[in-house]
View (cartoon, rainbow, N blue to C red):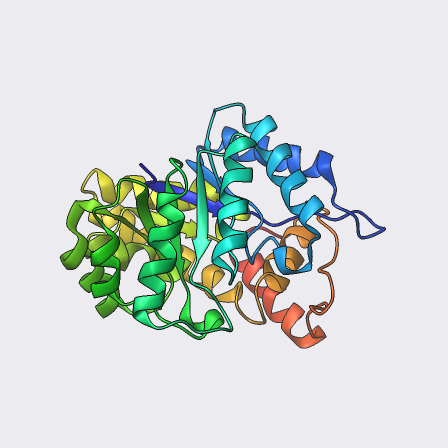
Length: 292
C-alpha cells in the first residue's frame, strides 16, 4: 500500500513561531506537482515533540485538506503510551488520513514481547493501515525482524519505516516478512541499497527539498535501470548526508530557508545550526546547484 517516495514533512512556522498553515498548503501543492507518493506530517522532522496536541491535529487536518486525495497522507500518531497512541490513531483516521505512523515506544523501552503487544493492540483498535517506525537511535529500543514477523499477518500492519541504519536488519526484515509488510528505508542515503535488498521506497527528509530527484531514483530502480538509479544515488548522497550535519530537522529547515522556502526557525530545545556547519551546508547546496 505504501510504496515509493514518502516525505517526512517539515513544519513551517511564521515569525512568531506559530504554525504557518498557508506555507503547509504551498508545500503540499509542491509535492503533488513533483510526484511525491505520500506525506508524513507531524513526525520528528516536523518537530512534533514541541507541538501541543491541538497543533498536531490541526497540521494533519490542513495537510489532508490540501492533499485532496492526490497523494497519500500517513499522519504520525505514535507515543510511548499505548492508550494515547490508540486515541491518536482514531483521531487521524477521523481527520481523513490514509494511514497512521506509529513509532516504537520511546524512553520506557519495552521488551520485544511488549513491542509485539503494543502494536497488536494498536492494530486491533482500528481499520486504518499502520506504518511502524523503527528508529532505535532515537527511541532506545530496536524492533527486531523476528518480532515484526510476528506482527506481519495482521491486516492493519502495512509497512515499516526501518531506520536502524543496518542493511543486515533491512534484509532480515524482507526475508522474515516477505510481502506481508512493506519495508521503507528510514534513511535517505540508504534508499537505493534498501531497495536492492527488497525495500519499496523511503520516508525521506531530503525529499522536502528535491522530491523530483528522489522520485527519479526510485522510478529508475523500479524499471530496472540500475545505472540511472546509481547515478541519482551518487548525486543525492552528499545532500542526504548534509541533512544530518546536526540534529534533524535543523539542517533541512536551514536548507529550505536558504533555497527560498521561508519555513521559519526550529523550536526549542532545537536551535539554529552552528555557523561553521551552516557554511558546510551552503557548500553542499551550491554543489547541487540549489544555491547560486
